Length: 271
Figure 1: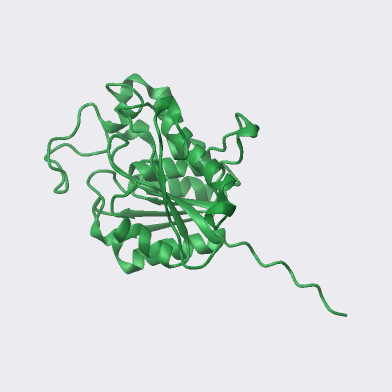
Figure 2: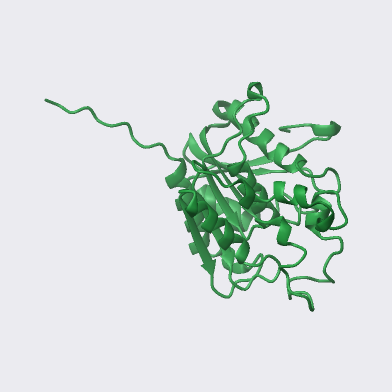
């Protein structure tokens, strides 16, 4: 257990590489902020990245049926603090921490990277130094209009939800009721110079969250001088198997290792 908000218990699972003191990243699952599990698809996603040399902490956070935003962001911040406090016992290097998330988890990953928590310094450092976002929602103000009408995409099993997952995240029946809250919960609103590097990966055939969400965040990051890479997977839908290919997993692991491994100390010149 890493936190107990409102009397509940939040857990995380740690997937460790063979080498000690490995760089560390959090994994944040998807599910529209309303469902999902930290253990889902661990074998396909988390274990291969851990085997490549990056420790992965799969983090449970409160779902929208339990608490509304920003509770989810507060939870993942608490997880970063807990991991930093316990890094020595866990055998990981938590000086530099990354975050990796998919869909709703990608949205939270972006916010964690872009929104430093300065409310109480005594709580500890919840910053992250790299972010990988798979098919994230980046602008909630668009979510009542940016998914085309018509039959649901093939990966969905029923009609489109009404209210939307985004509205429920904010405790509303429609995002039109809460425009200020929707802007505050949108990663594109919080882009700033000095943000950590981003890797954005999105399918160009995503029928649930259009790839324009990642494009918009990528453009904003680059305009602010932030190191951002955008990889559009040709023909890939939301939660597509293309994200679990060896190439996709290797790109995540390589980005995290590069961003989280400290630069070697300069060698003194010998006269």
